[in-house]
Amino acid sequence: TELKAEKLSVVMARRHLERSDVAILIIDATAGVTALDAHIAGYAHQAGRSIIIAVNKWDLIQKTHRVTADFETDIREKLKFISFAPIVSISAKTGQRVQKLYGAIDEVHKARFVRIPTSALNEFLRQEVLSRGGLPLDVKIRYIAQVKVDPPTFVLFSNKVRKLHFSFERFMENRIRERFPFPGTPIIIKQRAKSVARQSGD
Image (tube, rainbow, N blue to C red; front, side, top):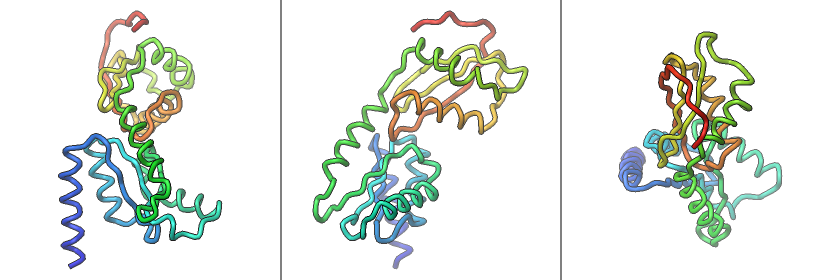
């Protein structure tokens, strides 16, 4: 039955995710984003995998600039939680733009292992974050450091650990993505208490 087929798809997807760094979410252009697509995308996101959205059967779509823009808007609206994932339209049947998908896989995989120098991160922190405010009055971020890759993980060192509002965490993630090259790759932001300021440097 259709339900059994969907369950099997999810099981197989989860097994593949356990053995991969980059997940390719294949969406049927003639069907749009389905509940099953969103379900599998959620698993990939929770597993910390890099993600590329491949829109297959693009050769069957009557393409205009508006149709292409509307299709991407619909994907972004339904899959907001993986807004960092690049979208590549392809046709597995004709081979259209498949080479571009290979290029995206390479780019996204490399992004998992990008390491940003601490000095560059703290310059970014001063210019793009601290100057704009938005923190609780009694919380002072002293510095930021990238502590690991695969996936990239950043730690905000502050005078006290208080759960930062999700809107500030989202703001931080968006600013990091604007400044540094992390296409298709999740980034993790953590917070730790630090009683004394760290000297700048790498």
